[in-house]
View 1: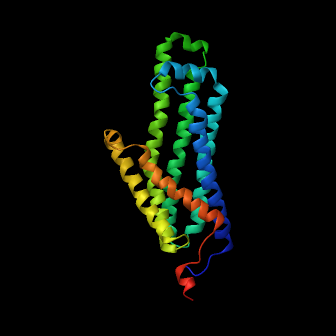
View 2: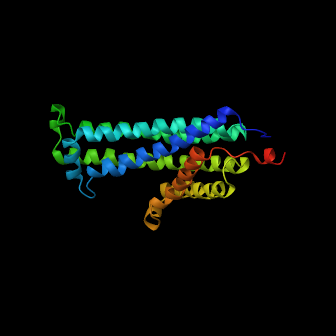
View 3: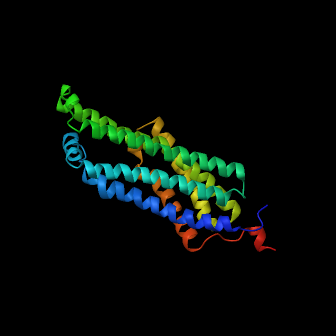
Amino acid sequence: MINTIDESQRKAATIAGFTGLFTMAIAIFAYYGLASRLVVAGNAAETFRNIAANETLFRVVIACNLAYGAGVVVFLTALYVILRPVNPGVALLGALFRLVYALMFIVSAVNSLAVLRLSSGADYLRVFETDRLQALATLYRGANFDAYYVGLPFYGLASMVCAYLWFKSSYIPGALAGFGVIASAWCAVSAFAFLISPEFGRAVNLYSLDSPMGAFEMATGLWLLFKGLRPPRNAESR
């Protein structure tokens, strides 16, 4: 039974709030601020030329993805410290689910480095025609998309588990935690549905899979950073 909030939990709440928001900002900046300048939708040849001509920019995107993955590890550790008193086993399960998601960004970095290698113009690549190199580079870039959507169900499960513990503990408002359970469950179920049937992605906008959950995690991060942890229910009744 939770009676008090200790100092380690309070510090972890600040770390979780800051890290959750910071990693989200990194992801948005990497995708919309940097990668979007290189990728030309429906034009593999132009995208290939852009990456070859802007290697440093593409490497910054890779570094941002790795920084995001590292930030997720810090975030899940802070969440575990906060939520462990509520239920140690469930908190650990949530941390492990989120770790699987974070590891997908290492896979993405490896794929992206393969794209750079293909666009490097190295002598040993001259045995390949340009269109074949472009096709291979597109294949590896597409694998990044696959890695994200393989990790997304684990992200949804992790967020759902944490939202359940948030609700049980009353550390954050119950309405916010309840919304988090629903939004995260939707993400996990719909991500599995998309993996089973790509047609699902044509019927439902893919941004709707993780956007509600992202809104929940952003709101939770803001709450933790500026409000901190609320006293447990049983502590309030004393």
